[in-house]
Image 1 (cartoon, rainbow, N blue to C red):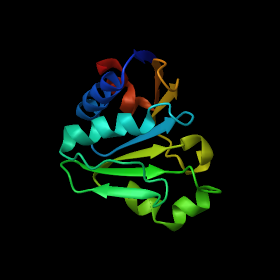
Image 2: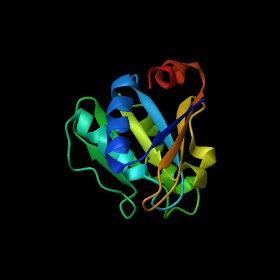
Image 3: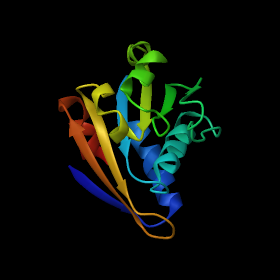
Length: 148
């Protein structure tokens, strides 16, 4: 586990760029944290690193796919009642793709999470610094945590 503190949104964006460069493909990143904790800002940084400035929260559509290299697939479980809704939109098919998958609000669908994943727990809101705890679940992500 590693804890990183980002004092500005720019630092969160920069961490997202560094993160995507360290991730293997395919990857699964589970984001945890309340409203305004910086989850979408982190994913915007990841998107910038793979070639898109279009990243926005997929709260209403549940999933956004970006045709980048590597591909970035961004989920938001905020409006879901349970993991079955995530499986109904094809989560298992997405997991089989050669892409980086990022899921916001992972705490709402724990039964949908793959056994190996990178978990990032974000805390803070407003003008407060953001504290990000990075946890490797499975050996695949240990080197990612070490690289950041």
